[in-house]
Length: 150
Length: 166
Length: 104
Image 1 (tube, one colour):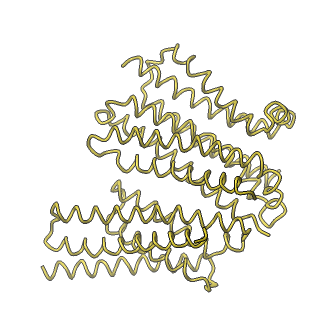
Image 2 (cartoon, helix red, strand yellow):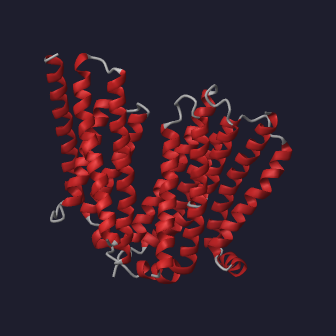
Image 3 (cartoon, helix red, strand yellow):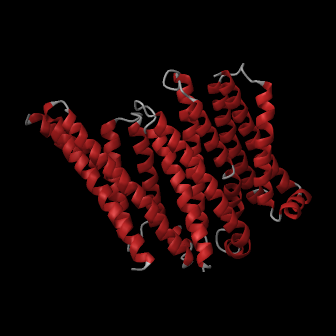
């Protein structure tokens, strides 16, 4: 793999994980006082992280994974890792930028989230879902990398 | 310094911070609760420990991915990444993340949560180092569960001793 | 404030439809090879096609639903619907690929 492709793979993982860290920060600090600015920043950076992870990961996937990595996994001990996990992952990942965008816009417009408990819990639910999906995508990615043997 | 040395160093630093701050959190919690209350200074000290623990966790996660990428480039494959030891370590980290979340939202008893958290850090450390072990995933999970119980009862022992010597 | 409610509602509903569209494109693409081939020929790769179409769906539906002025449904309810759709879609796609791999 060229240094460029290695950089893309590392960036994809780094940015995706960063998105999870930002959203976890959002969840952990949600009920603190006077933190709307912090929540806006966390949700915005999470959205950006997922978008850029989408772009760099997509480039790596389209230009390299299909012809260089997929055949190795399919011919190895665990072909289902591609057929189930990679196929699921590459489509589930598409949810993340939209979920993160909704969270960001909702937070940005949400002046009264502290006054409205129902609204607050819906934002927490959305953030938790986004983190869970991202975490599962990450675990799938680890399994896929782990299935690439000699 | 090559990338392998760098990411492994960061992983060890993250683990040290996590294990160290988890241990210190327990010791200081027991010490501070001796008088039945936690004042502002004690609360600040515990908060610093928690922040160091979180920093350790973030470093461990990112550097762990770095080690995994390097392993992927060397095509270590399922022998390394689907091994019982690696899967057990990942399971422990997931439990750690889940318990940290539950504790933050007070969805779990804090004594139980802190015991699981502390035991998880030590288990991840040992599983990471113990390269010669040939146990199955389920045996390793059994050992981990045992460690959680042992940690809980050790902490309970010191808590009750702290109250008695008040 | 009411305008913000309309914008937010439109964005949430568009996100719901976008996720549904992603699931549809994925399942339909697997069951209909001609469609997958069309995506590949049009966009150079089927996954790029799904990415672009999902963005277009989102961008197209947002102004449409904004014009509908969705005031009746509360934001909290819409967000929970989005959460439900995201979780169900995840389960659906995973179940679909599991079925395709092990039972087909």
